[in-house]
Image 1 (cartoon, helix red, strand yellow):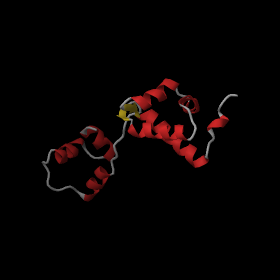
Image 2 (cartoon, helix red, strand yellow):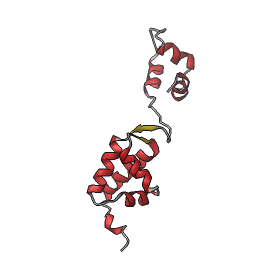
Image 3 (cartoon, one colour):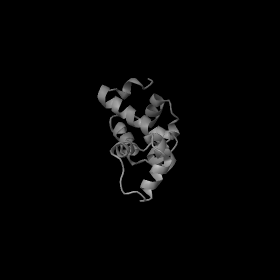
Length: 119
């Protein structure tokens, strides 16, 4: 994130952020510091992040009996997208979040993968 984006999220001036980041100010008001420290890093849905957690979650789902095709179908994703998530080093934030939420729902609700199989 750049100074402009940080300033916008914290509701402070861009100049203030630049002065703090550049070390040109010694003191910062408590209210300004609180606003700046409250800013969380926001990632765009198509940004790429490490896929290690996504791989771990997909493997855990597979250990519970889910196939990549069933996971993809449940998330309305292309099966190749799930396969790529497991083999590549980086994955889109959107996909990582979908798989994370799905994993949490499966573990909380006790979904059964065999119910989705056609037979």
